[in-house]
Length: 128
Image 1 (cartoon, rainbow, N blue to C red):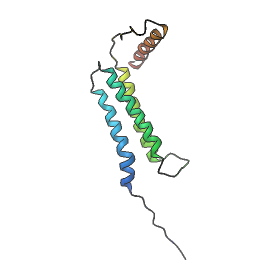
Image 2 (image 1 turned 90 degrees about the vertical axis):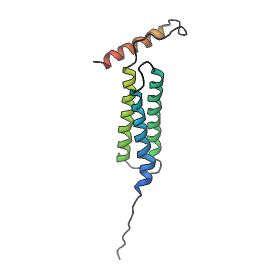
Image 3 (image 1 turned 180 degrees about the vertical axis):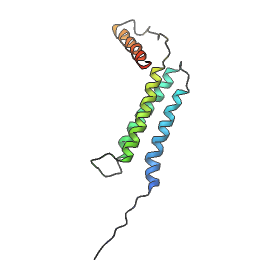
Image 4 (image 1 turned 90 degrees about the horizontal axis):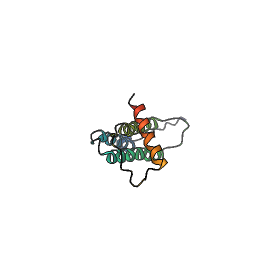
């Protein structure tokens, strides 16, 4: 006696709940390249939101699947989308305008000088 089991999965559910949101989030992160350079808060908030959304999608994408010890195609795809979102965020940081921010609330403390110097050096390294 031989038994055959025909097991299949509907791809539409997986695509709608995993691939479509991660693709849309990645494309939305690219909108930051069209926002003016002077609008640094808008660009930064869009980039951070995209990175956090991809982190959440990566966490919850494995919820409906059995645990396996290897990387699946979905894990790889979400990781690549995360890298694209993170690179878009870093690209926005590299294009910050060279305007000295208002430091009246910082009162020229050592922390302000340290943060400003780090940002200046990081931008110089990113432009090489």
